[in-house]
Length: 102
Image (cartoon, rainbow, N blue to C red; front, top):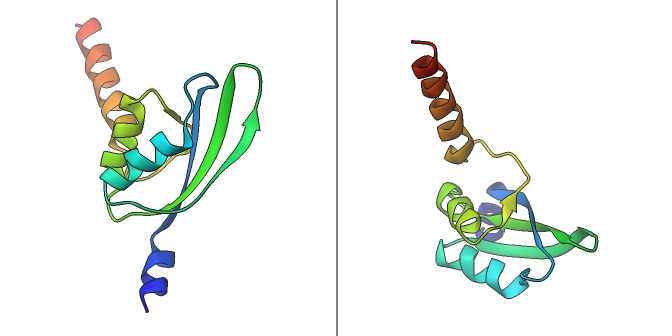
């Protein structure tokens, strides 16, 4: 029964960070602080400058975790409905356009 609840909320996050500052443990700590259950963390792509990782998690509210990942300079490559960051950027962009067109 508990396993069913975890699988229902399963989300895959793709993150990118500089190779010199990338840390699996930091990603896990950031997510666990936000009450996110981690299923797996794996490297999907790497080059001389960046590491791209895929994180499979279970979370009821994903927005705080994504916000905190960005604060620690992880670039979130995946799109999520719960991600208010992109919506805020769109709203601010519309407001700026409106202001500039006055």
